[in-house]
Structure formats: C-alpha cells, structure tokens
Length: 399
Image 1 (cartoon, rainbow, N blue to C red):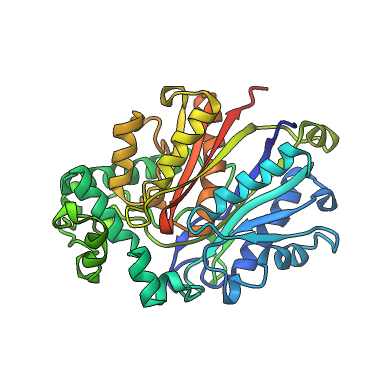
Image 2: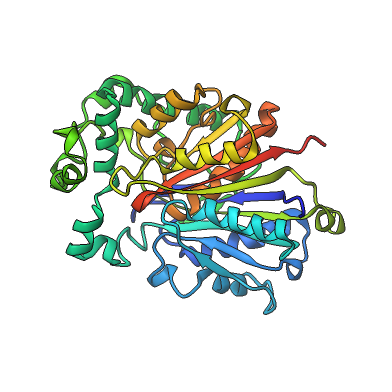
C-alpha cells in the first residue's frame, strides 16, 4: 500500500449561482480546463505524467454532461493520452472524487492523478437532469424525496434548535469568512478569473460581512410553502409537526465554482519535484434515512474516525459543508468542535455551495487550514441528497 499525498490544490472563486454571477459567462468545462492549466503553471508538471483526471458533478446533463472531465482535459492541452472521468454522489461528488482517486493511488493502480469537482448552477440548474428521484411521483413517494431545506427543518425540529440558534450560526460563518479573506487565508489557492466585462474576479462573492442577528431576524422561513411536509411526516410521524426555521440566511447559497487537487505517491512527488502538503489517510462513505438525509456527512466522519482509531478531539480542523445551520449545530454538539476547529475560515452558508465542487474545496481548504494553524489531522465531509455522505481524513506533512 502506498501513502497518498496532496501535492497541490487550486480552485476558482465561488460566484453567485445565477445569471448575475461572475462566472455565469464561463462553462463548467472552461472552469475545469482553466484549473488544469493553472496546476501546470503552479507546479511545472508535465501533464502527460497524470494518469487520470476524476471530476465530481451533481447534475451531469447539458454542459455538465458527456464526461466533462475528458473534454476539459483535451481542451486544456493535456494531450490525448490523459484519461478523464466524472462521478456523481450528489453534493458529495467532489469529496468522493478525492476519496476514490486516493484509494486507487493507495492500492497501486495510479501514481499521479487529479481529482476535484465542478458545478455551474447558473448554467445547469439543480434538478435539470430530471432524474426519477426528483420527478417520478411514485419514486418520490416511496423514497420520501423531499427538498433539502425541508429535511433541514425536520432535523432542526427533531434536535430542538431554535431560530435564534440557527441565525447565530449563520452570523458566525459570515463573520469568519469575511475575516479569512481579509487575512489572506485563501490567497494561495484561489485562481483569479475574469468577469464578462474583463475585470478581475478573485474573491468569493456571496459573503455578507454585515450579516447580524437583527438582519437575519427579518427573513421569512424559506421552505414552509413547498408543500412537502406530508411526505416527511409520513416517514417520521413521531415529529407531529415540522417547525420551519431555516431562512435563506441560514441556508447555503447556490454557487458556481470548481476545484482540483493533484494527488500522488511520494515516488511521483520526488520524481517531479513536488512538495507533499498532506497525506490523504482514508475515506468513508455513509448512507442514512433519505428523509432525514443531511446527517450522512456526520455519520461518514464518525465511521472514518473509528476506522482510523482517532477520537473527535484528535481532529484539529473540521471542514464540514454547511448544509444548513441545524446540521452544523448537531455536529458541534455531538463531536465537540468549537468555532476555532469547525470551518475556521467560514463555510458554504457564507461562501456558497457549488454542489459537485464543494467537497473538493473542503479537502483543499482543510489542508490550507492545517498549515496555517499548525494542526495535524483534518477531516472534510459533505452530506448529499438521498441520505448520502462522504468524508476524507488528511494529515499535515510537516516538512
């Protein structure tokens, strides 16, 4: 078995996932190809040495269809001989791309590879693949395919969180994200892009540094009118009634973005003069009740820690996709990380959720945070639709 090292990481800034967003004019293939070219420029790597490119995307249709990883690899000028493939684990696609690619390197099938994710929500809207999980009435009824926001409110009701607690977490993550950008936490990993008007786009644009408890208090619940409570309550009648508490302020905003990680063995790192930043120690995939849905990321973390023989206290940085405030409060309650260890530079409620890209951003951001804070172990985890979750454990290389 080979050790797996994170050798480099680069991402785009996250843009509003709408026609007003700063990346709307670029296709998802454009975003991935731009990052591939940036990896070569940053490392001096011969792209022909890369043995596979695996990209996660949650909505693989239209501009995100037809194996965009292979398309981007060809358009990036990496040559005909570099393979590419896409995977879909819903919102956990990016972190799963890292986990699966790392496992192949660990097993000896690959020596040097690229893994990551992309989502252009502004160009390929959520649900546009029209899969049966979203559109087939009998499938929806039998599985309990509810909107993630309704699942978040169901979880908040079960755990007894209040509106004030949910809003307070949202204020915290916006405050941390704004401070992190001001400190330069992301300067080494974000590739400046160009807006449609030619101006430079180099900062996540969804952060609202002026967010306060008072400003959030004025927002109405976002998911009460979706009409899906009967589906959720049919699966969980013991709840009685769902308290709809999440607003757009305590929910992850939709974003466009992409991220890539260069992964390889020590032998390959030495061969190409690359500095290992972190070991990718293990990954875990979990599945839970598809109606509760959003607890799967935490379940994957718990499985991962048990597999590695670590305790929650051993983890210096938790990068956890903020799939609504309630699930972050649950993780904090159950595993114990405070604001300094849980998303220390802010999370997806503040900076945006680019579905397939989010997990890759989490793994790379975890390595960045460990280096900045001098920590040893970090986990990155994402919950996805239908009760899926994936987590990855990394260890900083102190060299």
